[in-house]
Amino acid sequence: MLRTVIIADDLTGANDTGAILAQDGLKVGTILKTSDMDKFDNFDVLCISTNSRGILPADAYERVKNAANLFENKEGIFFSKRIDSTLRGNVGAEIDSIIETLGDGTVAIVVASFPNSGRVSIGNILLVNGVPVEKTEVAKDPTSPVKTSKITEIVEKQSKYSVAYISLDKVLKGSSVIKDEVLEKAKNNRVIVMDAQTINDIDEIAKGCVESKLKFVAIDPGTFTASVAKVICKKDEKVKNIGKVLCGIGSASNLTREQVNFLKAKSDPLVVKTNTVDFLNNELKEKEIDRVVNEILEKEKDYSVLVVTTTLDEKDVIDFSEVKNTYGLSKKECANIVTDAIASIIYKVTDKLGDKIGGIYASGGDVSADFCNKIKAVGFDVKDEVIPLAIYSRIIGGVFEGMPIVTKGGLVGTKDTLIKCVDYLKARIAE
Image 1 (cartoon, rainbow, N blue to C red):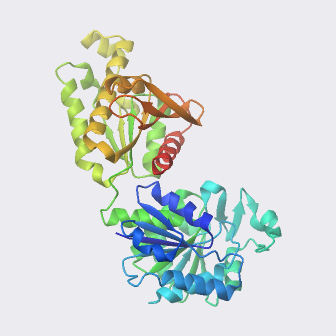
Image 2 (spheres, rainbow, N blue to C red; image 1 turned 180 degrees about the vertical axis):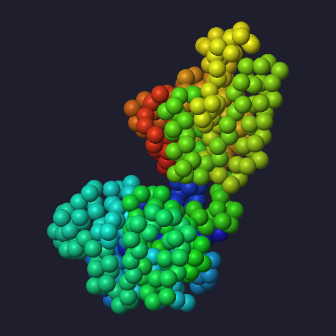
Image 3 (cartoon, rainbow, N blue to C red; image 1 turned 135 degrees about the vertical axis):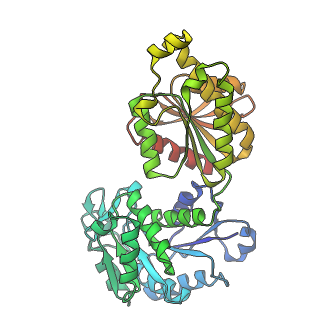
């Protein structure tokens, strides 16, 4: 069922924003001819290009209006007016068009930041890789030059509506404060510009705007739209059941724990920690494997990222001297048993969930090798390097032939490496 419509001022922007949403498991389509609307009935997200960036404002207004009016029943659809990440084009005219076409006091929420592309808004100034946009090549654009870096000024010059501004210090206080600020500003303004420096800031803005229960349209280069769509999907308990990333993490290093906890802080994964010492007991090993597998199967429907890890805190790390006294096992023997158990878990989960799993992330020692042995794979079709020593491949042979997989050592990367690898896998799955 169609839930989100993205109206972009060019085709590249339409596809780009659509790709961000596709990474979250939504079925996204870009329509080239409006006469083909019937071919997109089973899509969650529909992207439309008005090709209106370099034309007259009045013409851009009409094209956006016509695009929005393709949808007779607009209730229940979240609309996004995708704008250029450097604010070129008919930003104000297109804002006016979309809020007037949607009607009922629709408020435009402008979040110009696109952190993954180096665009951030601080103090109402749009920075491109740390440089005010007016000091970049965009100022010399032949059709849509940008002569000021002040976001509200750009919008005010082009829109007939009053423009309010919410600063970064308010955004940093979280979704509850954002909700109150949005409700207050919306009393006297139809357009609200908001600062954001990070994706987490944008996620908080999305939560605050949805919680405000205002009727609003997203005006942004894509990240804000994706965040709102994610909040709406979670709220309605309609997270997609295909393309999930399953992470099996056997490393117990400090860096690995930092990576898992950073993923938890910045995203919304399902994280299940094993009672690792049970793997060393022959009578408890299979019971613990089954416990973890069953917990994932019971909860997976609400998550697009599933994580199995042996430690979240330093106290979770096995005391090998105690283990040797109890079980007579060396450190190497313990490691082999643990990695085999993690491999068994990700194998069983993948086997049970089938097509719901779109890709595997394997970290730590021999987890990936043990997993491949269990599925009778014969090798990897190596495709890319996500970061040094984190490699993206496709599995060759075995019961999951062609499955995307990222393999990484436990002592590789920085705190954001896991989230980078997960996002990379989502992008490859979406393709």
